[in-house]
Image 1 (cartoon, rainbow, N blue to C red):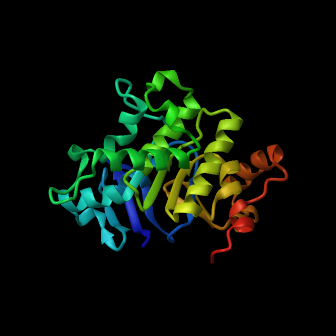
Image 2: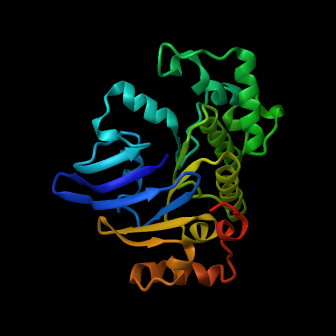
Length: 267
């Protein structure tokens, strides 16, 4: 099981956003896609779930070419992929319980033949996912505006986890957060990857976060991959843009240690 890009090119009119980009994310690993604004980072996530169709090349999810799938096939791929947006995107008129259980309701079921969950099963699932993001049942009857922004981010992540996706796709998950909440989000991404063995792709411009929890880092610039490798390999890169990212990051976090290499016993 993996996500694989094979010579993917994406154009919008005359603008080339991605040019023959190829990479693969092994099961249970965390890939950070880094780059400046507008280099196609978020486009990669949209291609994975079929929100965009690549101009050429193949986007494979578990061996299926997303570009060739019709509605039913796309629905199955999207159920495998949990998207965590830059903003919490909670429904203001619903309680936190209703937000968390939303994707488990009959109207969100992708196939008519799917066995529906009872309300007791839905509540059990909600409580399990809530505990994974270190929150308790006492907040379930609150509305989004009654909790902090950092808690809203956690609720958003728990909601994404509820249908038990195989892949987690994060779009700038720490943008606009204070350092403490940023660290909490990073810890959650790392812990969930290891505990649930889900594969995570994190689109970001934050090299510090990548150095801390990534298994692999991929740097995009001018529509192409300019650097790719483990944290140690990226630290030794001679590519000017990578050096620029590293210089700024290491000045702020000179002793930053990568958790993936020190705490993950799996190959």
